[in-house]
Amino acid sequence: MKFSAHQKLTRRDLVKTLGAAALVLPGLELFGGTARAQTAGKTSKYIVFVYTADGVNQGAFWPTGTTSSYTLSPTLKAFEKYKDKLLILGPQMNGNSVVGNTGLAYAAAVQQHIAAVTLTGRYGNLPYLTDQTTAVNKIDAGPSVDQLIANAVGKDTTFLSLNFGIHPMGGDTPSDINYQVNGNPLKRLISADEAWNFMFANIGTPVSPSKTPLNKLNAVTNYLHSRFSALRPALSSADQKTLDSHLSSMSVYEARVQKRLQDEIDGKTPTDEACSNPKRATVVSDADSVRKGSDTETLSPFFMDMVATAFQCNLTRVASVSFGYPGGGDAGGLRMPWLGFTEPLHLVSHHGGNADKLDKYQKISGWIAGQVAALMDRLAAVPSATGSGTLLDETTIYWFNRHGDGDSHSNSSLPNVILGGTGGYFKMGRWLQLPNTSHTKVLISLANAMGVNVTSFGDGGLAATSPLAGLTG
Image 1 (cartoon, rainbow, N blue to C red):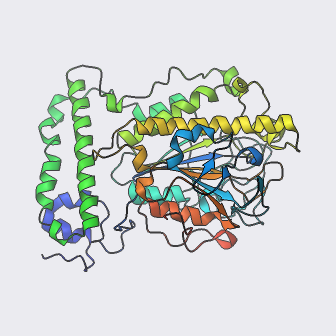
Image 2 (image 1 turned 90 degrees about the horizontal axis):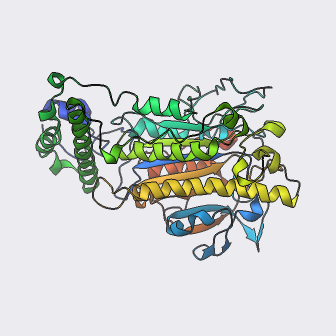
């Protein structure tokens, strides 16, 4: 069979010619109708969605200066060393004041606290309940953009996505952000033990030498290189780079797996430093700490380490971390007693202009920014499997919020930030001052950054039919 980059082929066509090896191909231009968008430009390999609720202290969040020459605010100062990997999606400013109803925004009709809107671009129409702790908040349809991406890029990873939550449920308002195609919410891993067991519980299981074809493991990529050599002339330069990157990642992964299997056969404790399990023993988990919220101080770094390890070990390419839940009255949301106060996020977000509450409001957001920066540190310390750059260079992080200002439950001036190298897709190092702009356009842009061909997303007044212009520069 002769291949042409202009004809639409199926994987069945390739299997006939290349054998079963064709089944592990990533999405290429050669395949008609693929969910992956292959372009001559660069794309991100990994993506993390970091969610917080109840808005921010707007006066302490936005930078000062100009688009490319700006000074970071007290809340964002944790990103100082990563200013070249920041894309701040801000509102228009009048001096140091936010111009009302500008920046990223939801439609005005969106209910006050419904979190589903953030990644689905849908209203949700979910009920308020006295206690959301055990609620199942199904929406009319999905998926959320993280799951749209995961289903397109995660077929050759252990997990399509990993979803972590730090006190993610409670209060009286729906707080789920991750939704399947059928509208069912995805469960979030909420404790260190639960997350560790989900990801790593079977790693130490003894392996029978007779059932472990170690001599074949490192031959797979060599075989694929040989079989795909006939395909290369029919590929575009972009597809050739995609294929080379895919095979390189497979080689690294096989080497890690082979070492682990050999260690287990030899009765040794796995010592692969590149894929060592994050230590959960240091996470505070007693009932009193969980009740008071002090567990967050150790649980958050653990979850960030889990995300970095999952990317490093090819366990997934899509992850999300939720901080708290929206609403919930005086008992609602995150508590951070190590910052010197015990009031929860929801309470201080209703600041009414009170200077003490505004200060606490900023400190909570600033601490979360520090956690995102620590994740960036972790990713920046890991060389890319391709031998060029680091995991951070290949990763997109989207830190987003349900509200602009929690005191007014505002649906505009959303304090959303894109971080990381993004694989070179976005033009970073900028602070954009946007007019009133649909947040759903950013969701489309994030999918496109991951190589997923999305031209429209969302529903009703939240729907968008194009990415946000100007992000790629």
